Image (cartoon, rainbow, N blue to C red; front, top):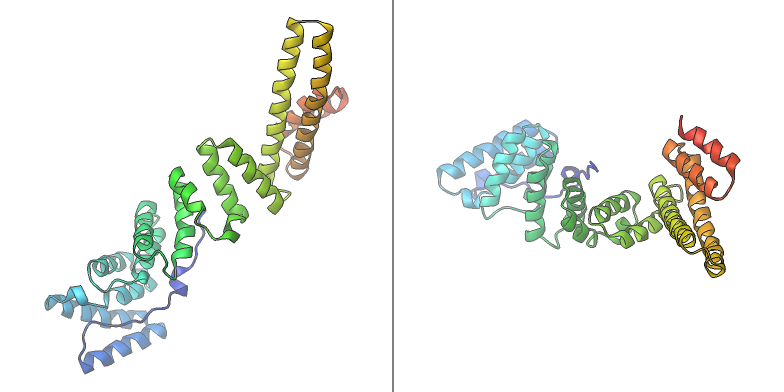
Amino acid sequence: MRRFFGFLFVLSFLLTSCSTTGSVSKTKTSADQLYKQGEYQQAMTIWEADIRSSESKGRENVCESYTPAAYAAIKLHQYDKAILWLKKATYSEKATDSTYVAMAEVYRVQDNLSLEMLALQDYMAKYPQGKYSEKVGMRLFEIYTESGNWELAEKQYGLLPEDKKRDESYLMNYLTINQALDYKEICDSIVGVLLEVNPKQIVALNWMGKKYYHLAEEAYQNEMTAYEQNKTRKQYNQLLKALDAITTDFKKAMDYFAKSYELNPDPQVANYLSYIYNRLDDKKKSEYYRRLSER
């Protein structure tokens, strides 16, 4: 879940200051060049002076130095100062899409999931077609999943790029979401796609194994109960017919669990296999997996 998209390293923005005089224009260019050369402290000092000048003149609403100064502060790991300037930028007329992305990234570094989410939501509200909207949407999906905002996460999945909808990690998150929402049929569909993407996906293999095991076991119990209550030839023939379908489902479950156990020898999976082989009247294999389940 904790992917880092590296927003700060792919951003392309013009680092400008507030004043329009010739001398300050040169200062702006100097700060820009210093930043690009990795001289973040010197660049920040210039922008910070420009911010103080603008604020002293009551021109903070049109100051363009807040965001670049914040980027320099971020490079210097001065996150509290960066957040202060980014907030001031959002109150001004000069906030950009980079302002909100940077704010979200700082909150992420500080492990403040709720404020990161709010910053990204602000970005999407203001720049729904912005150049970072795709990555912002992907991060929002992760945050909604991590924070248990299931309805928002489910909606956000539909907005993901098509290739991400078939990405294994995103599919696993989507499965978690639909499990929480108790959308069983959608879960089955997601698991099917997971196995197309990765035939060795253990969670998906176990999901399908349990699905067919419970289908078979429930049908078995129902048919046996019906026969015990009405031991007629007709009921017996119905039992025999039903056992064919039940056996098929047990074998499907067995195949999924066997693949899963081969990849990851889980005692719980061995326990399922023991029960299945018992139902299939293979006592030797049932006992074999029973012993494995106790390890």
